[in-house]
Amino acid sequence: MENKLNHLPNKSRQALIKFTKLLTEAFGDNLYSLILFGSAARASKRNVDDFKEGASDINTAIILENVATNELNVIINIGGKMKKSGLAIPLVFKRGHVPSSLDTFPLEFSDMKQNHILLHGADPLEDANIETGNLRHQCEVEFKGHLVQLRRGYLASGENQEAMTALITASVTSIVATCRGMAMIAGKTPPDNQSDLLKMVQDDYDIDTSAIDEAWRLKHGEVDESTATLEILFDKYLIAIEKLADVVDRM
Image 1 (cartoon, helix red, strand yellow):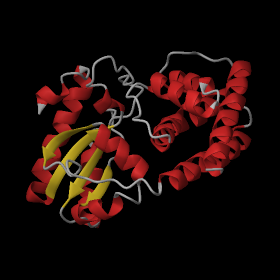
Image 2 (tube, rainbow, N blue to C red; image 1 turned 45 degrees about the horizontal axis):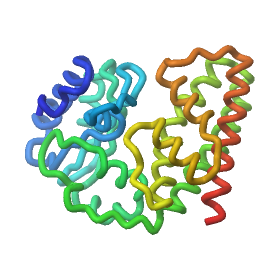
Image 3 (tube, one colour; image 1 turned 45 degrees about the vertical axis):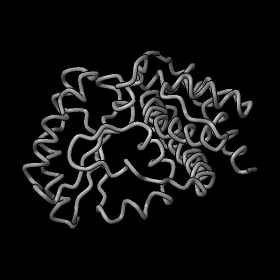
Image 4 (spheres, rainbow, N blue to C red; image 1 turned 90 degrees about the vertical axis):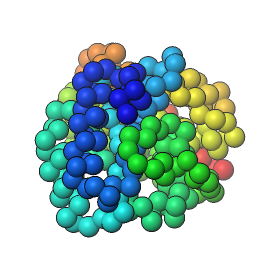
């Protein structure tokens, strides 16, 4: 397994190796599979540098034969041992529910199928046929839901710079993921690189996505905004999401 993770920095690589070991020891045959997805998996491809250790989430999905409160408590206990590892809270599925969930969450599973690394067990996505009929609706829900939460969060932040930064950086990964769905709706294969993806969406839908790109760079520590410029970014970020929501709403 370690060879599959050679593209990652040592701290992240060792965290995933330890996480896999703890899960296999705790669950035995109940652990059907463990997969890595998101930017940490996309980074295995040449010229893809979206993963930034310490800033990017390390996303995993755990598929168990059986899932109840006891199994969730085991995962909580393992997570407590790895608080500083950079691992995000994992997705947890019961094996039998994966095939029936492919059309319910086409956005997540399409991205996961395109970019994932099997860390343990059988690959649940190897032969998955993901129907994208619900993709347009899911993209609309994501964009409009984030608009509501961002505006609500801004009201609660009281123009506090740290709070505004947290609002933007907490939402941008999901916004970029939804842009992958927009690329698929346009009949395209989403590029692995975030900048290329946003350029594709901008060209296909004639929407300025530069604020989303800047929000992504803010999350990854590549820009440092003052309070004044952060408010400008926040406004442009909302406008871009609103335009994307309007476009997908009219489809």
